[in-house]
Length: 472
Image 1 (cartoon, rainbow, N blue to C red):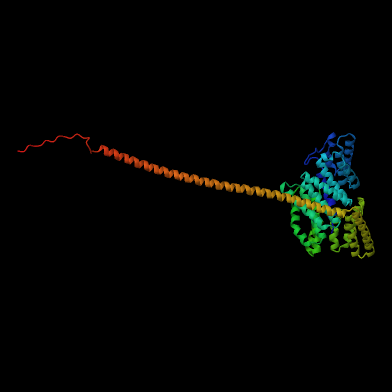
Image 2 (cartoon, rainbow, N blue to C red; image 1 turned 135 degrees about the vertical axis):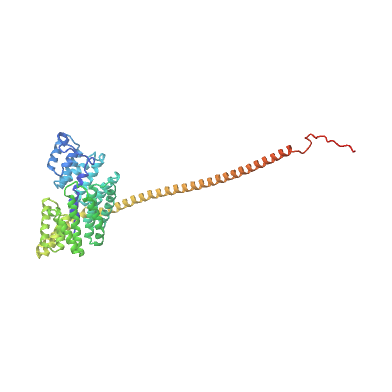
């Protein structure tokens, strides 16, 4: 099953949330007069009221109420998101990129590079897409916009997947998931959680394409956790959370069925049918792969006819990876399952011719070579960034060790100094005691000498005369 392209076409509609001059700007609900001719207000109604938005942009252009850069950027947004007119959207996006003031408006530059990457991808111009992605990633790193880096890596991964470099695609999706997981650990918001869920969907779908069922099962818990976080938040665009849930159910319904876990696959498919997305014409892309695996070919063929009708209605190029693999190839399988071999062969030959045309287009564009080069450059850039982080960590560790050694030396010196002071103090105390003893002894000696001098010995006293009797 190859849902990757279809997923991106549904998912990236929330690019409108990134294409503002200032995040979180709140507009008046009922603006009047010139308040309606502002970037924020027109951006807000670009999806729900595209015609009104275009009229306001025309008035703003005629009266010079907005800059030419803002007008082109908003026209690109309206034609891309609401009218699905990729030619006009590309025209205005390229006009915005060629504006002489674009580099002075980094937020606008990043948004337009993102939209251009999507437009080139959807039109099958992989060379321009990959080159624009490379430029966008450089700008995003320059302005520390890690979320945009992840978004552009997802587009690069889809390009790699379309031209057959599935392992390069998985590398891009893994790096996008790593970045977005770090972003959601800080201050998570609905948009970031949505892109994290989409990156998990793209990775899971690539693993399913490779039939790497072990990795697919391992990723289920991480994918569920991202989806749970998304569902816990109020969605900024109605129906997007429902589509994300439907995508998860679709991928794992098909995966479980192919792995032989029929009961689990059926349970996932039943959950898929409860979503609003599965009931829409565009949602046929989510149902057809499982129905084919279950050999419910008649139902699958009806869904595939609905998908082709949507493709033709939107006037999209049939020399396209998604059209060939999501519609024609599966349609040929369904017709073959129904025993309509002649029609299946005709559809199969048509798919082969279109695939050959697509391959020639890719080779003429040198898209494969550019994809390989960019893949190596991005990997080298990523490794260099990791090396820089490691170097900084090493410096921090070295500085910490030096500080620790200094502290230890200081403690040793202080301890030694204290010991010396203690020894001196002990010596002084002993000396003081000796002096006290000496003083006491000296005082005793002095007292003894004094006593001897004052006691009766010597000729200092008065001798009384004795009377001698005469002899009788």
